[in-house]
Image 1: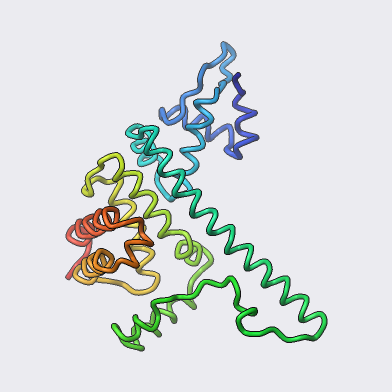
Image 2 (image 1 turned 120 degrees about the vertical axis):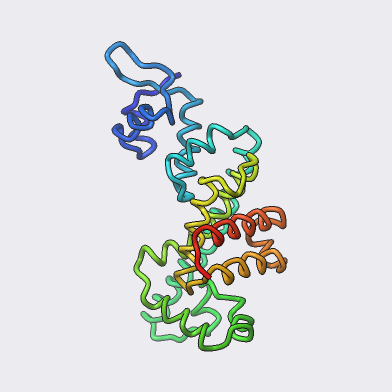
Length: 248
């Protein structure tokens, strides 16, 4: 069974023009093209388009997406999709709690009641490392970070919320394919990582390297990032970035 470019565009939310562009650059070649020029896609192309959209959602450029798909095996595809599914499920649970909190707040305001603090803030994400950060770097540095956060744009807030997952999942896919940390595709993700970090504070060369080593040394960060091996891969890539992009 095949679907026309119009049908695929409608169901995927990707414009026909974008699909034609993907064809032109060899990223998504239709199963066949009719004599009148109309493109048709079968199941294989639909699944490949899903992969493209997933990788784009992770913040990867089209060049990097093409590289990942060209290298990708079925097993690594399943691994990345599985990790992304886990993140989506966690987000679904968190957003569900937030919705319930907002509903309860509306209900209490309407009837003039009060809510206990644990109910007021149910579902909101809290920083479990704040006390440790104040102990390690001091109140002034932590307060300066919060001051930066108050000046974020909506785009900054979205980058801070989803960016780390984009970096970790993108690196997991590249590591699974054996891509060297020197590769542009890896360093593009590290650029995003540095931009996220810089939303809170601006590390120099040594500080950024130190951050990468701290990830490796702390099992809590390893668990968040995706395990010891991926954390070491991230650290090594951060070291390359620091040596080539940052000053002392």
